[in-house]
Image (cartoon, rainbow, N blue to C red):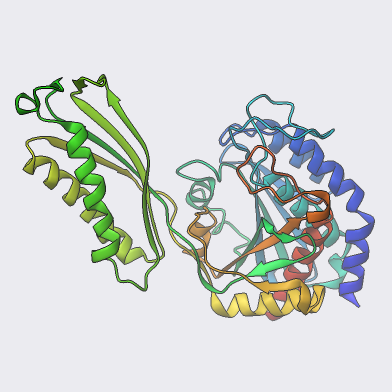
Length: 398
């Protein structure tokens, strides 16, 4: 059986995929700076004799595995390759060697797994038809997102054109060996909100002589919560949060001239998203004006909603159960976190699933984006093998 061949290759190649993951973990690079990472991926593909193109969005790599009748069907697989600005606190032999930079979101796992998938598929070209397009994408962690750049550069249009795309992401809430899947709405859009509230500063003991931007800011933040609680359809998930407030000057007895606020708005509906962003600006500027001040609102549009195409996702779930067993495939809830894989899901049938990485007995369960994040490297065998199996099974149906 082909599934057994894939499992055997995933098992036998596991030590090398672990070494690849550890190399990447030791040498993380920030978004738009992944030069050495891209060169490493290209070198590994060269070693295996896999055709590829290096230089997408500067540091990205796109590889091609051609089975029988390569033009008959095409599927794309994606991994992100960038790291985060975090100082690693793990005491492991493969700890990051780049100060202040760490693979704290598992992109080293994604990249190593996809390289493992490439190795497996390259060994089995005689056993499937069509072409697998492997996208090693830079800059997932930073706007405008590497996915949007690759799409603009034509990664989905340049032949061979894929009919669908799959991606996976680590999930430390799940044990290694399991995967989580959800069809339909899965991850939120994410927009950044920057407000500058201007008033007239002065002595705190004479509030009648000032236009207090601190007070105005407080009223704006409270009022903006009504955008979610009173303007949003209650069945549409929405989050509006502010994480940073800074005044220019000010003290216990000094009211400043200006206050800066930063926050994020997230939702699962693109039409409501546009309306909400407009409402946020109207409410903030209106309240500031009514209290004698001024509010400048700047919104940086982030990643769109990530939608897992239902029919494709149901097939992926069935294939995953066939490969791993029903007890290893679980339904997971939607998340208000964001991912630039969402750009692919806006233009192609897409499925983005989660790869379990935890091992409670070994104490491996830290959340992503923390300085102690790590994985049970058994997940690499699951990640590489399952994605190879999904690719082959999906090509059969195209």
